[in-house]
Amino acid sequence: MQKTNAATSVPKAMNRHYAEITELTDDYCSKKLSEEYAHLSRFATAALCRKRPSPLQSGSLHTWACGIIYAVGFVNFLFDKSTSPYVTAEELANAFSISKSTAGNKSKKIRELLKIQQFDHHWFLPSRIENTSMAWMITLNGFIVDARKLSREIQEIAYEKGLIPYVPADKC
Image (cartoon, rainbow, N blue to C red; front, side, top):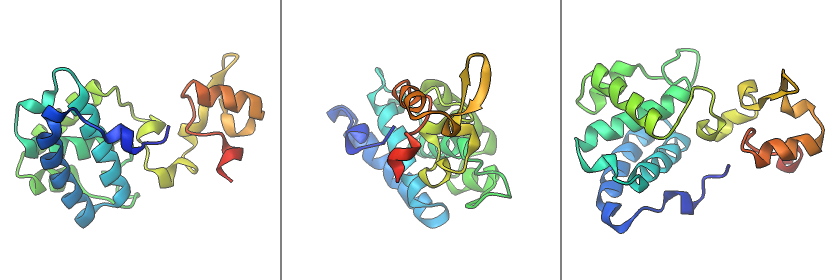
């Protein structure tokens, strides 16, 4: 699923919250992470703004901003030393002047609200999707298989169902 400008649209009543939170996430991402993290953080912020009622209407904007980056980082192994970029959960929390446990708890709430799971390709950094085998694993006739090795017809069905990020042949 491509995250387009429509995916970052928010109700007028939430424009200020969206702007303030994305200013914080964009700033952190530009200094410590990447534009891909900033983009996914904006996408998550917009999705939270569209919730009715929006959870962003209460609580600290710094806590929400940190929790959003933490949630996106959770899917992308941000806290794993073998990945780049890498930061610790404590460094992330400190950057927003909150405790590590508060950041983790807010991230968990965000992941629940947005139904984000560990290997959810919708939240992978675009540069990692192609090389992340878990983004391509589907169940077919009771077997877990790599969709990239299946026929185009099956890939198209899997894509239409949102099971894989794109049809590999269409990427070329």
